[in-house]
Amino acid sequence: MASNHHPPTYRFADTLKRLLRRNAMPNLKKILSRTHPVDVAHVLDSFIDPEKLKLLSYVGDDARQAEVVASMPVSKAVDLISNMPFERAVALFREMSADDRADILGELDEALVSRILAALPDEESDEVAELLRYGESTAGGIMSPDFLAISEDVTVGEAIGIVQESPDVEIAFYIYVVDDAGSLIGVVSLRQLVTTRRDVQLRDIMNPHVVSVRTDVDQEEVARLVSRYDLLAVPVVSEPNQLVGVVTVDDVIDVIKEEATEDILKMAGAGEEWDDKQSVLSSLRYRAPWLAAAWIGGVLASFVIGHYESTLEKYLTLAAFIPIIIGMAGNVGTQSLTIVVRGLATRRIDVKKFWGVALREIAVGVLLGVLYGAALGAMGFVQHDMGGQLNALAIGMVVGIAAAFSMVIAAAVGAATPLVFAKLHIDPAVATGPFVTTTIDVVGVFVYFTLARILM
Image 1 (cartoon, helix red, strand yellow):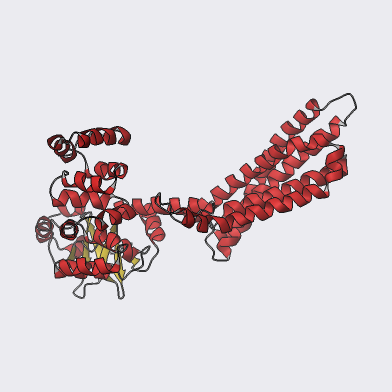
Image 2 (cartoon, helix red, strand yellow):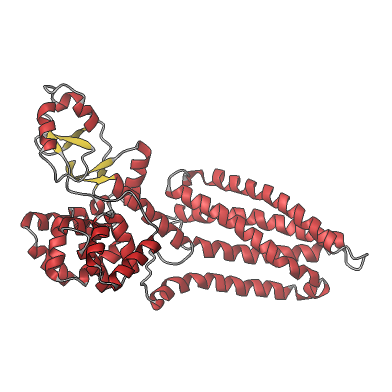
């Protein structure tokens, strides 16, 4: 039985390492057998592969070991499976659910996959092969083929008996009702099932308005449906409305984490997936092209500053305010960018309302610009009031107005860039961070020195 206590990973790992060094196998078995498989999966990342395999063998029977491996990130599970004896890998795959098998097998070497599928029972092998046909990030790719589908003619009493005799179903939140052809026609919740008279047929209590998805629907859309309708599972259908699987809420949580991570990495221009074992060259290949935009922006900004070299030499104090003006504008642009990208991803922002969204962020930028521009301008005036040696009032006006203008422009660019990308059917998260900050740097410097030349 798993313990309710969840020790910090580093402390748990240190305890296991000490026991490994002492070769205290009985203690290791006792601790690991009482620890939740998810916690074991998490702590295994602190060990090298031979140690992982040794610790895994102390977790318990094949079913518990399979649960640990299935709870690991897919890349980690693939590494572990690849380093264990073939017979052990097959034994663990036999205990996994079909969707977990498919996730891991989809990343393994093709030769090893063929051997494992050949060693599995025909029914399980066919299930996995069917799941591997679908795209990795689609409803078909993340669904489980273990679900309860019962004919509309069956009574409530008979349906309850079927549920009790179906221990292999992963999570029986709903009973799906099908016709003679296997097409999805309704859904019944477990609560509804156990609170209805046993002689009533399912067709009389089912909800015919079923929220379902096709096998090729993107996993993000599945997650949105679960969130919108507060579902615990979504049925997956193929043409013509044949029920082929179900996506449960635990899979959706994984999708949300994965997609959020992917969006953040894309916005930063750092690829789509983070892996601590990714090579330096792989990281370079992902990140270098997008950082080229920042490099080009920096070069352009240096040209702008060079163009106003005479102004800068005459009023050298202006240089002191460049970092704060660019920094404030960059932060405003990043805020607008993050709000819009996340809004588009969650469908809270409609790209058809382009101008409404853009003008709202510009209005926020105006208010922030006035607030911080006035504060910065006042600071510039007070700091450089040198008895007429420098025109303190002009400096204050230049700094304040430049800060306000830059922040307004930053808000506009940060909001408009992802909206334009979305209109062009380009993922709005793709490297918008480097693009927006680079644009703001160049425009901010240009506005600053142009105002300085005009007002001073």
